[in-house]
Image 1 (tube, rainbow, N blue to C red):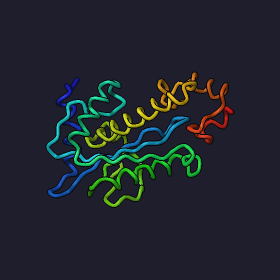
Image 2: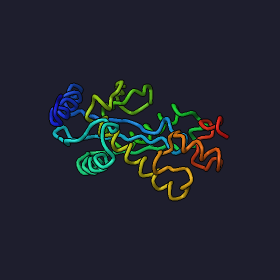
Image 3: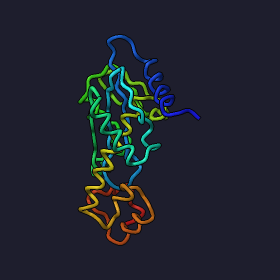
Length: 203
């Protein structure tokens, strides 16, 4: 089993294969395609070529505490960080795939980059070369950084929403379709954060 430093070097070497002098590389990922409530959030991150943050990895592999700490390190070292989000009503209007692409366009518009390494999504329409990578958050340092930024950003949003709508348990489920969440929808009906196209079988 490889140690943390070796793991980070693997991710960095992957990105290095796309690097040429003067070329800026961004990583992009989203979170929130599957939940029943809340926005889809995308992050676009440009890290310095000589960066090394020990716990950068696929956000799903990190504990919440580790993600939060690494998120702060990313923000302190990144050259650019862009955040894009599309809310529930817009997701209902244009569908989740188009909403994901729109969130990515918004995030990418806030950074300067020549190449965008993207977790799986294709044909976004960015001002640069798009390179979609299957399971990119587990392969690319830049995409992994973006996955952490997107995840922490959205989780914090859902924690705030939990204060407004405590009956749905957003602090625990982050809007995903847990049994507790579905039962709350059936009992209380939807709130403005719910994606009506996702919960039509529950109301």
